Image (cartoon, rainbow, N blue to C red):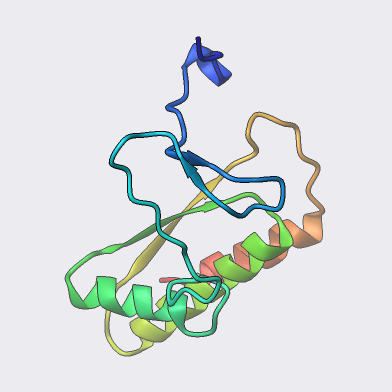
Length: 128
């Protein structure tokens, strides 16, 4: 019997397990085909240009913007700054691409330095 997670929901089982080193996947389903995913994915959000490419592609296909989840962690801050920068660049060329910021704390009380909020809000204000 699976254990209930947050909110009483029972999570779906994973399709495979890995050994202690994170290698050698073992499929948990008959007929399941496992693939090894490279560490150098083209959609790795930490690689230069990837977020901008997503923003440009979305805008070119008529999307009005993105909703961005943010938790005020250093890697998240860098990604937020990049998506805001990319949207500003697109908009400077005549587009009207919007960013909606969804701040998440996962239910925890998280102290945030006023300077962090100010920097983040100043980045968000840059989007018309």
